[in-house]
Amino acid sequence: MSTMLEQLKAVPPDPILGILAAFAKDTNPLKIDLGIGVYRDETGQTPMLPSVIEAEKRMIARQTSKSYLGPPGVTGFNSAVSDLAFGPGNEALTSGRVRTVQTPGGTGALRVAADLIKSANPDTTVWASDPTWPNHLAIFSAAGLAQQTYPYFDKTTSSLRYEDMMDVLRQRGPGDAILFHACCHNPCGVSPDPAQWEAIADLAAKRGFLPLIDMAYQGFERGIEEDNLAVRLFAAKCPEIIVTSSCSKNFSVYRDRVGAISIVASNAAKAGDVETVVHALTRKNYSMPPAHGPAVIDILLHDEALTRMWRDEVAGMRGRINGLRASMVEKISSRNTGRDFSFLQRQSGMFSFLGLSVAEVRRLREEFSIYTVDSARVNIASFNQGNIDYFVDSLVTVLKG
Ligand SMILES: Cc1ncc(COP(=O)(O)O)c(C=O)c1O
Image 1 (cartoon, rainbow, N blue to C red):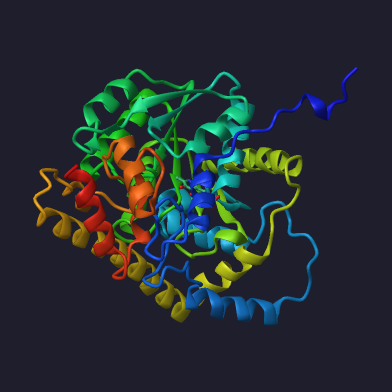
Image 2 (tube, helix red, strand yellow; image 1 turned 45 degrees about the horizontal axis):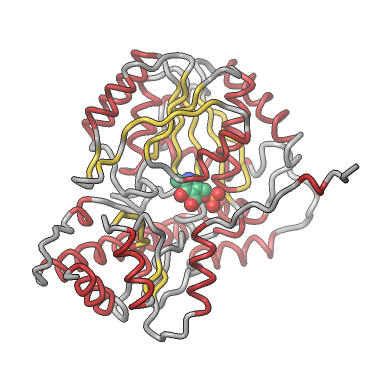
């Protein structure tokens, strides 16, 4: 008779962790890690934002208890985050159709969304873009939901497969939840344009599928308000939507686990009912949400000067990424490689696929200590003035064979 835990087999490590370990061991002073999933500044650090540091000091000074929060979490945080996601004064908010509940990060929000969908209709199929953030699929599968993918990224043109995507979405209906990335698609950096978002939202209203919008990079594409366009369109046109917000990137509070789920129902009474279901689900999952990070963001977003400071900091991160995209395109295009990288400038956010073969990715790693995953997804924020020329020289050498 074998014991319970003997049944378990080790899970193979995430390929990205293997690359991280190899990077750590590499002694080449010029080495670059392009695989990491967090923002880096010009010095290669993941910064603490001055607005967050100041709000945190105030939070510590004000805090009087560490007793449990209630199930919704920090309510001031919830209202501030839903204002960011929907835009203050949005009809869905003013009519009471939105309920926002704080969660441990965007991942926590996605898991709560998955559990909520499973409770509402266990036969729902969740449709994710091909490709998507791998954890999306893991989260929905852990919640026991069926999954499919819809066409999204065209590898040959490095752009959106808009017509193919719409063909698949036209076949969907009330038994389907469709997962969208609100902006800065991870991993491909490609977003629908505003007219395409409008057509997708019209289709959702017509076909009756549930839009599930993952907003993990608000402010990193075109601006804080501009980046919630998809949420505003779906909220205006559809009776029900779910939005999952992550503050990890745009407030740079990754380890504090700050996120929220916002549910829009067809009327205020139904929204209230759904919120009770959310509380019942979180109660048997992690019981109560964490306070620290959301209490900090609550203070920040309710102080005009700190909010202004934060908006400038987000603009700075966005500007740095976009500047790197432009400078990468310029530097590579002057080197006659015969390959066009101009797509980097048409994409947004931290991630893009470089469109390299596995052999090219391996050569970059083995000969030049430039590390990324085999798909050649890179984090643009890993570049800086100190390493971009070394990267371009190495890439050009690899491309010229
Ligand atoms: C697309 C996407 N959604 C959600 C998340 C979750 O972020 P977190 O749980 O760290 O807030 C991430 C993080 O990388 C992401 O890329």
